[in-house]
Length: 105
Image (cartoon, rainbow, N blue to C red; front, side, top):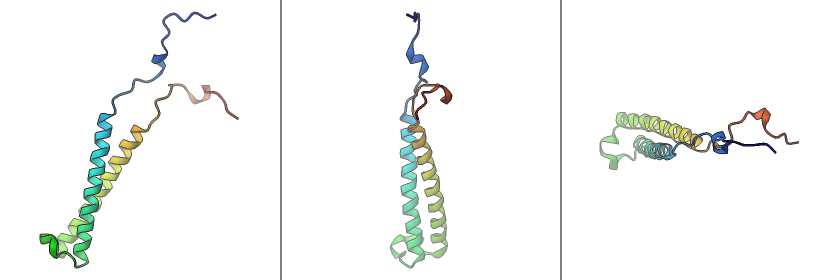
């Protein structure tokens, strides 16, 4: 039988860092996406002639700026949210090369 002096299986796994910064980043990305969606819809409503209740966004110049800015904020928010969610979902498996893993037919 093999001696396992000083062997610790926990050393094979990578040290997991806390997920809180990634969760906060995902929440911030979701909030940016929601606010970008609302800003886009407000600009679009103002362009379609329903901007009386929006005040200063009632003009067409302001509506176009709000629409473009809303789309930019939406894309940035979705990008941040997706990258944080992808990094949160990465598996914390053993740090072994793929060719050393068990072959399955």
